[in-house]
Length: 289
Ligand SMILES: NC(=O)c1ccc[n+]([C@@H]2O[C@H](COP(=O)([O-])OP(=O)(O)OC[C@H]3O[C@@H](n4cnc5c(N)ncnc54)[C@H](OP(=O)(O)O)[C@@H]3O)[C@@H](O)[C@H]2O)c1
Image (cartoon, rainbow, N blue to C red; front, side):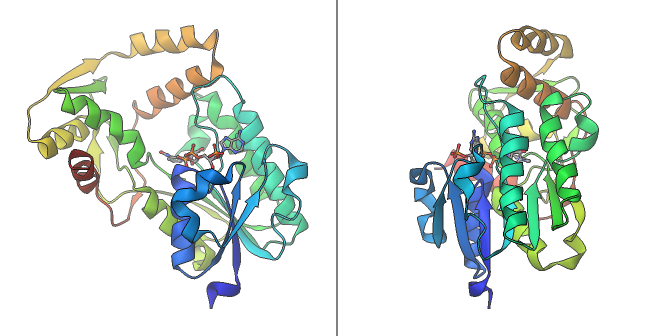
């Protein structure tokens, strides 16, 4: 029944977007994947019923992107330590370009992947402002909208595992703040649910994975899976604050992302627990690739 329903996936070449395309295709939707470089779709080529080649930062390349589509899911966003492009160009302007093509094509519903607690964090983390500005524009777009706000995904937990392999855990402050990291496939499942679940229409939803851990416990879990003991070091806040201030002088993106991690590591980042994939299993896969 969904086969006639086309869903445009913006960000389809990314970590979350690839899973979004897979889940939508598995549920029978016709997936139109936006890519600036189609080679980046190779791992999910089977899930892409159509490929639309366009550079989202340049509006003129998106003509026809949303023709006959009912829904857009966008996880398009900047996650780079390089100094260019700016978050304004990608998180805000590129998503606005996609939104405008959706409006012109009378798309019914726009699902956007934001950041848990983004609205309250943006005062301290300016790099989040463009994404939050987009959220405001989406809310006033006249389209049905859903803003999904996942907490940190499993890819952000890899460094913890890597350190544990070398016998170390590193936490900021006392390491007692909590998070429930989530697998991208579980984020994608919520994005697909949002298309039909009316409780997710015109609303925001903050969520995370099934298990809640303190940061110290994240290192402990990695050590357990590896079957080894580790030494946990507690890093005070001031060295990272100094690095953030120094980096800002020559690379605002890098400084902005460091600030994002500094702030999210110094508060609880726990969303509604859901999903089927556990961090323990993810760490097991990393231990036995
Ligand atoms: N991963 C997480 O832990 C997490 C957790 C919560 C929320 N989020 C939110 O979800 C968003 C996506 O995360 P992700 O992990 O999927 O990121 P990702 O793997 O870096 O994917 C980002 C997507 O945006 C596209 N993009 C980036 N820069 C672009 C540019 N200059 N022009 C056109 N397209 C561009 C990428 O295209 P290319 O492949 O061509 O570069 C890719 O499709 C983030 O921005 C964040 O706000 C992420």
